[in-house]
Image (cartoon, rainbow, N blue to C red; front, top):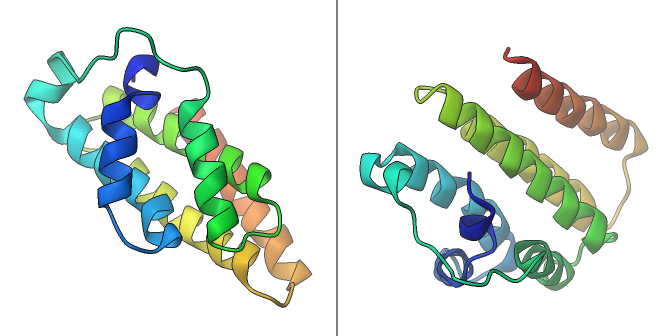
Length: 142
């Protein structure tokens, strides 16, 4: 996955269109990337931005995390970003992969945990194990 695409105006516009609520926009990242990577034309030549702004996607995800009421918006944004990048790599290596769907499910759990008013520390620990397993599984080829 090109850094140009991940930091592009196009992706940010698509995320803005993916829902009205910040949680929908955060989860929309995985659907948009899955649709894009499933398209034969997009894989060959995705939208390009001549001068991508470094960390633009992370900044967008941080703002949406804040608007969704996340307790630690920067941490949530970084987790979602790295989950998306890892799942995209898996999808590119194995086009039939459901890595982005699995990443979206883990993202939903992280978002809910961060935005729920009561902290369930056992669940936080378990979601961390799920995310770590997902990331390790994607990078190790499982």
